[in-house]
Length: 145
Image 1 (cartoon, rainbow, N blue to C red):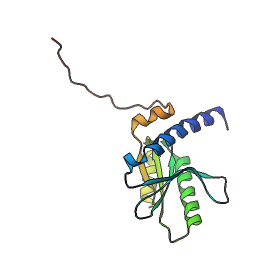
Image 2: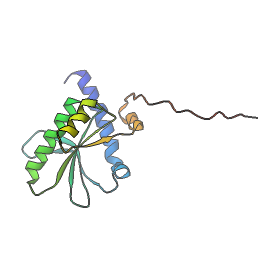
Image 3: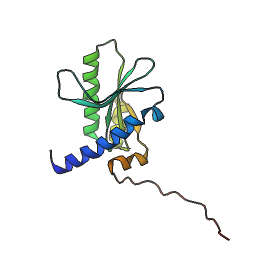
Image 4: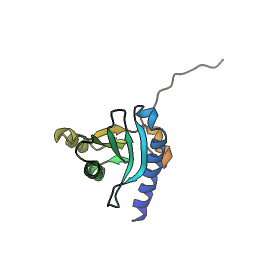
């Protein structure tokens, strides 16, 4: 891995770990199964897995910006989980990021890829040391006497 790739991986890992710790706040019906969850017979790992009360398994890929690589990883990991758990298990892929490239959202919807998308809250970026641009907040002017 290059230094840039190592740095991005470290940032994504920090964000993933924070999301895993706080999963129930954002997805209250889901329970965390595993972080860095390996697939049988492979060196590939999903960022995290969760399960909901209907026994739906979700396989997450966490990115800073969801682009082609994130989409590919989410699809591959979803396919690997479906293979591992069989056709009777409901498995859904989730691509989580602060921002999604417009083409990625268009592709997921147009091709009916069955991936869920999750926009991470901007303050999560602090966990990975990622500078995220947010819209400025206008505060009211207060007069102090």
